[in-house]
Image 1 (spheres, rainbow, N blue to C red):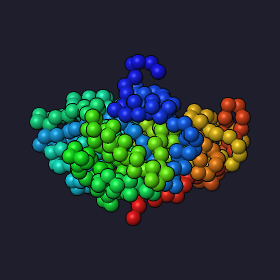
Image 2 (cartoon, one colour):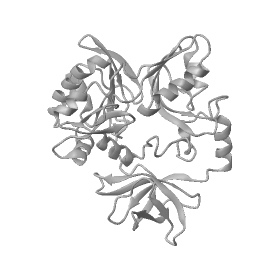
Image 3 (cartoon, rainbow, N blue to C red):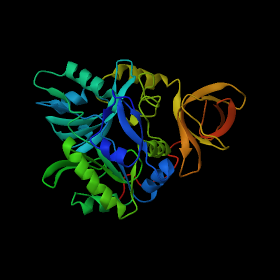
Length: 368
C-alpha cells in the first residue's frame, strides 16, 4: 500500500492475520481476512458474532455552554428528542440540502456532544461546525485520540460480559465505563442490522481491548471481520453509505432519510431547500432492487423500465450472502412503484430485478 494512507491502532493486528487491506477514506483498513473472506465473516455476524475495527471513523467533540443547542441548530435531526446518555443518527447538510456527511451524535450533556462522522468527511464537518460556533463553544477534531471496535451479532452481549463491560442498555444509548482501569464508551449502535455494540476506547488502549475481544468471541466461533462484510451487511439492511447513497448531490428527501430530519425545528443547515423539496416532491427516490436473475448489480449501473426507458441508477450493489442473490439500492424516477420489474444494465448485460423496500433481510437490530 502507499505510505500516505493513515493506519488504525490495530494495523499490526490486521497485517499479522494476513488481512487484505485497502483505502477507506484515506485509511488503510482490512477488507477481509483469509479463510473464507467476506461470506464467512458476513455469516459469522448474522449467526454468531463478528468484530470490526472501525477506528477510521471520525471522532469530534462540541463542548461549552449551549453546545447541544448549537449542534441542534446545525445538524438535521432534533437533539431535543433525546436525553443525555442517548445517541442519534443525524445529517450535516449544506445550504442546497445536499449531505456533507451522515453521523452519530452522542449527547453526553447539554454542554457536551460527541460526534462520530465518516472518515473522509470528519475534517469538513469539524470545519463547518467550528466556523459557525458561537463564543464559548469549542469544536475539536479527535480523530486519532480514540479507536472504535464494533461487536455485532447474536452473542455480542456474552462477549462484552466476558470482559466485564456493561450490556443490555437500550438501542441508541451509551454507557461511559472502564476496562482494566481505562475509560471506554460502550454504545448500543452498529451498521450491520444485528444486535451489537460499538466500543470507543482511547487510541493506545485499543489493541489490548481488541485482543481480549477476539479471545472472548472465539468461544462462540466469532471472527474478526473486514469492511467488505460490513458493506454487505449494511446493504442487506438498506443502510446508506455516504458517497454512494447520500452525497452533496443526493438529499435526505431523495434517500428516504427524512426520518432523520427535525422538520419542525426552526433552524438547521439546508432547512429551506429540504422543506421546498419535500413539498414539491423528490425528482428521484431511493428503492431496493432484488435481482431475479443471476448477476450482481454495482454502483452506477443504469436502471431501465422493461420498455427500455432509463429510470434511474444504482447507488450501491452487492451479492447478498444471506439471500444468495444480487441486491442493490438505486435512485429511481417518481413513476416507479414497489413491486415493479426493472432491468439493470450490468456491464452490457440485462439483469431483471424487483423493486422492494429495504431491508432485504429481517433481523433484530434493536434486540430485546
